[in-house]
Length: 130
Image (tube, rainbow, N blue to C red):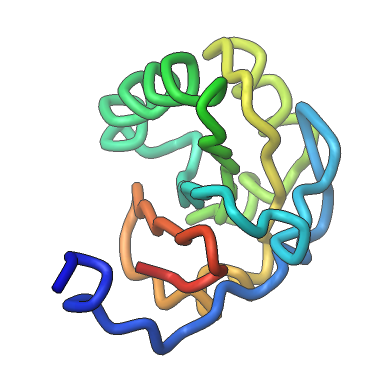
């Protein structure tokens, strides 16, 4: 028996349909077969996100050559956080290197069952949220 056998594989990762994509091309979950994807929910106004995101950036730097895909999902807490210009400025100021999808209506947030900032969901190579 392996760890894979112990963990439930019940919820498939849904596509990341959002308002805008920043810092890269859209990531299609249906094309990520065989790759591990980290879906990172964040808000540029959250100090907790500012503390965690450098670690995510380091994982991206170390493991992207091994197939890890990191995608940022910006789900704003406040109305002004829905501005693509503000989020793009925040992405550039913090030196983020991963694609970011704007989730202004919290649709992705809800589909992935996220509850707080930052939130990290891992998707296995078969497309299941783990």
